[in-house]
Image (cartoon, rainbow, N blue to C red; front, side, top):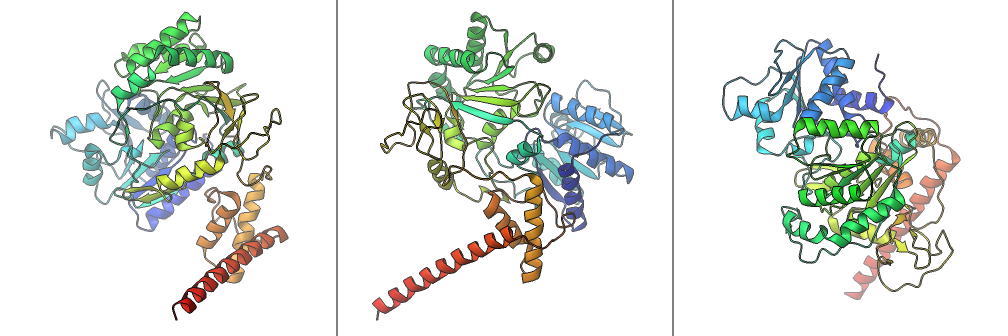
Amino acid sequence: MFVLRDYQDLAIEKVRQAIRAGYRRILIVAPTGSGKTVIAAEIVKLAAEKLRRSMFLAHRRELIYQCAGKLEKFGVDHGILMAGEYPYGAADCQVASIQTIAARCITTDRLPFPNSDVVIVDEAHRSLAPTYLTLINHYGEQVVIGLTATPIRGDGKGLGHVYDYMVQCPTIQELIDLGHLVEPHTFAPTIPDLTGVKVRGGDYDPADLDRAMDRRSLVGDIIEHWHRLAADRPTIVFASSVKHSINLRDEFVKMGTKAAHVDGDTPLEERKQIITGLQVGDIQVVCNYAVLTEGFDEPSLSACVLARPTKNLGLYLQMAGRTLRPADNKEDSRIIDHSGNVYEHGFVQDDHNWVLEEGKALHSTNADRQKDLDEKNPITCVMCATVYTGQLPCPHCGHVPVKKGKRVESRSGDLMELRMEKRRTAKKRTFTMEEKREWYRGLRGYAIDKGKSDGWVAHTYKAKFDVWPNSFSPDRDGPIEPSGEVRGFIRHRNIAYAKKMEKAKNANDNQASGTR
């Protein structure tokens, strides 16, 4: 019997509540490594128990076989609708390739669309593509459930045009706290010189980016620092082009490292052999371009080299998230950023506060996000080359830097760990999930006593912990008497709000008196 995690059970229950409330286009947001396919398999199983037929839709063979394997473990009768596979039309669920559906049901009408009561769309950030929209629109009042770690398009816009209800699983940091993901440690050089690299379609132009990144000195720098930071770790490398990936692979091999290269034209059998070699230890480093981002699941990976700058937040999180899954004898992950992505987008474990709005991805604008990164103010110590945030004395050697008006001081390309610390204070208490649960329940108790809404509870919780209370449910986590600590925090916020209102009133009064 397959046992789901608490947050997976909760996500499925929220989906069922949304369906009962009349929603038919539901988006599940779950970080890389949280078990999206497990959630999908359980939904399919529950549908089959009610004699409802399902379709799981994916765009890559690996994702299709991955879902089929999960359904088999769940004991769900299923078929695979994909070129090269024998169809089984009587199955409770069809695991289908979007390309096959397009070729057989959309571009031509050789076959009807599969008879499905529930359609699950994997990597749902692709849902605004014309083929996906045609398929989703075909199913009318049927339930369509999207799965994604990053609910934004490549240009940063949200998915509110397709989905009308969002269910959020715990954030990356919450999953780390729960022990379901490992802690990432980020190391970074100076931001690469991308002068002259144009932006097209919301991201860097591939040809310009290749010229900027595939330089002998930069390739050598990547190899050198990998040997210093991750020489004993299974590693995935994200390159800026096919040629760049091949060059990196060749340099790793010259240095005596067992390395391989994968791109979109790599034959399927060769790709399988490379992944198998990585799993058994015959290959240590896999370089790739635009292949091993979505759906690639190899828990043994514990180092990631980012040699591909991107303005696409979703792509950055997909790449960096490849190494966060736990495995035997794996304590953490190392993200070696040669791309400047951490300065562009922030730390992998940052809370992005996703929203479901058409044409909008985040509550904050890009300018707000840049301001947030600037406030963290990463500093590179000129004495020992450690990069840190949140305090002036270097935590390693105690050196106090002289402010020179630069956001980042750097030391000639050395890679240093970026230490993620909360701004405004050097030390902050760490709360366990159980302590956070007690806070949530206490806030609910206060809200019921004072006649406040669930929205007030959520916003007050976020003010305290910097994340939304997605791990908890009003149905399961009932109200309790708030502790003195909870009441003190609420009182502090009320006083601060009252002072803010008084200040605004005085300013308005002064302005009014000045116009008389």
